[in-house]
Image 1 (cartoon, rainbow, N blue to C red):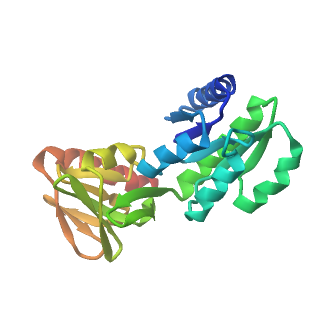
Image 2: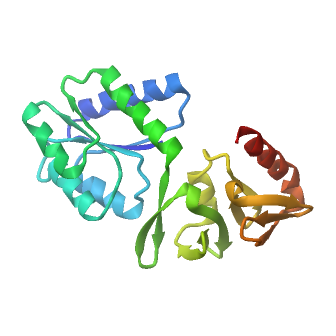
Amino acid sequence: MRIGICDDERAQQELLRSYVEKWAEDNQEKIAIHCFMSAEEFLFAWEEDKSFDLLILDVEMGEMNGMELAKKLRNQDAEVPILFVTGYERYIAMGYEVSALHYLLKPIRPEKLWEQLGRIRDRRKSIEKIWFQTAEGSIVVPVEDIWYIEADRHNCILHFGEKQQQIKHALSYVIKLLQHRRELVSCHRSLLVNLQHVSMIVKNELVMDNGERLPISRSLTGSVNQAFIRLFQRN
């Protein structure tokens, strides 16, 4: 999970970070936490990478508060879950305007935060969406819709259903981004494939549900076959 914490008080930032890290350790979850001292600092980072699974925003910040930041994100059609932190109950009703996940009232009780982290984890496992940068802007794609991703020099071509889209990411970045998804495996140095859309394996090829065939490199044959068998057994 990739979590952003935006709070202009360093002590509050560190407290939230410690609670999130404790939850991740107890639940054996891999997390990456990014902290920001202002809404403006967060927006700068957001333009570069929108792949956050949760944003924890302090309502009361400097020039741009957490509510104003959330509205900007929603105006971009961003569906990222937002968890507000505030010391005042009067802000709670405003959360409906931006489809906030929940409010945490200060002083924060860690079990309340952990409850929301559990909800996000469960939601991600059912329907996870990934942001990709393109030449025209950003697109968001459900992981289950991805068929395969192929390297294209320093970028990649994303294949989802009958569509394809060039994305401005190296394959190594995409593999790292999706490494927690067991159904996505490398079958070749230039290919990452979703085994959910593979109908069979024939010698050194994967046969996709639409009949398309993708090569399997000799060095990866064993690991791809094992991953396919594990996925079939789980289903």
